[in-house]
Amino acid sequence: MSNLSKQVEHECDSSAGCNAIELLLHPREKDLGGFSVRRVLPAVQRKMVGPWIFFDHMGPAQFSAGEGINVRPHPHVNIATVTYLFEGEILHRDSVGSLQAIKPGDINLMVAGSGITHSERERPELTAVDHTLHGLQLWLALPEADEEIDAAFYHYPEADIPTAVVNDVAVRVMMGSAYGVTSPVKVFAKTLYVEAHLKAGQTLSLPDADERAVYVAKGKLKSKETEIAEYAMAIFSDQKGIVLEASVDSRIAIVGGENIGKRYIEWNFVSSRKERIEQAKEDWREGRFPLVAGDEHEFIPLPE
Image 1: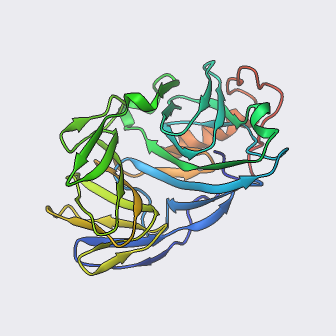
Image 2: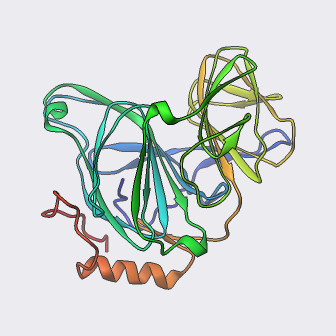
């Protein structure tokens, strides 16, 4: 997705929880142009968790026939985006020639590296009927050594994402390793992304990671006596043996990994170097980014 403004950090509602929870973040709605998301990261209180620097929860948005998601071509540098849908579909096009319908359960990894342009729209037959869009989009900051790698796009169908049952809880290891299984999805640093579905009363131990957080996409959790509400993100310490308990049926995302250092953010650009962001802005103004194959005639201008 593309941000509408240059400023992307926001003031989250936050609070301290139990000793194992360093921070509780509650998202604010962000308008992406006819479509809003709940943005948890980056926040003023916490910009990153491991390499994860953006965390957006899209929808569920209900579109009437003739309406839908229609994000014009826009650029990124020095990051990778991860799109995962619960419901609906997005038609992804990019400047490396990818044309991919993103569907529920798939993992779609777009590596911006030295620079990529992409659009997010819909197939006409989907727009023609009433439909829903619901899912997560996350951005990974690339390690400094990989910030300028060649742009690429990787699609992993649902069947390729490993699953496990942990204490009767169904989990999917989307990226990285956890609960004895390893995802095939490409990573650039130690990265953790797990989805879990807990029934009321079920418990799940958090996998170890240098930094980690839990987002409640649906339901409600508690850790010891601290409640983690729906749409909240709990950022945990590296304390071992942390157990989550579902107060009601819940769907959660566990994210984390290694700290890869400070990043600068402006509009759709993320980098370890301020001057790289300035160069990217100038390149977009001057039309030096590559065009999206099959979507060459529109673009989102740089916010001024």
